[in-house]
Image 1: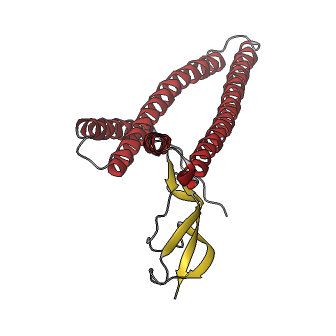
Image 2: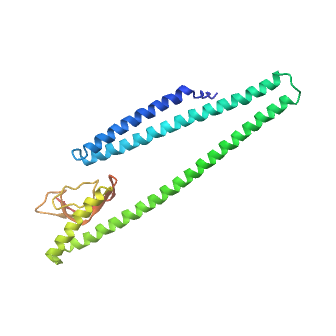
Image 3: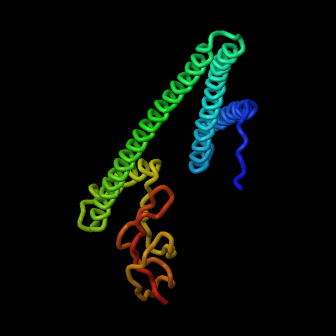
Length: 249
């Protein structure tokens, strides 16, 4: 037999209200610490602390608004229902004409129907807002995916240019290298990091993909001889591994 869920009391919503205020205070404190010490903290730690602060901030605000709204609406409806119920009972007990009690019942039933219709409207409105939010998220994901594709194409263009560096003018090659540094620094903050293995690096199965194995007298087995194609990390996950030629014992 299914266990009945106990109804939530006013104490529960007051507890949620207190929890929301506490979360809000912690979020503001963490946010202040992060913004004050952003130059001294590591970038990864600052990002995690800042993200956590915003999560706590939104969670606390949501709990406060939800608990307060529920308490306020509940008190209004409880008072309203009590008023109509008392009116119906009074009509029954007062010994008025026989039509009085049915009329009071009809008014009470009609009031409940009106409340039900109002709740249905609220549910429909929330469903519409949810559909709009989902649509916005899908558009945002599409825009982000398009941006990543274009950013990777820009890296590929600079990769092809530098691959044939011996054919370039020295000033032009230096300009492309400076552009690569500036562009990398710009997109790193947005979660896109290129993987550019250098000769002598150890092969990393998480970041690299073996394009070929070649014997080498200068390098030990498992070291990178050359990079065939750059790879990319997106939001701390390898999206495209770098293709490398690896020395073989």
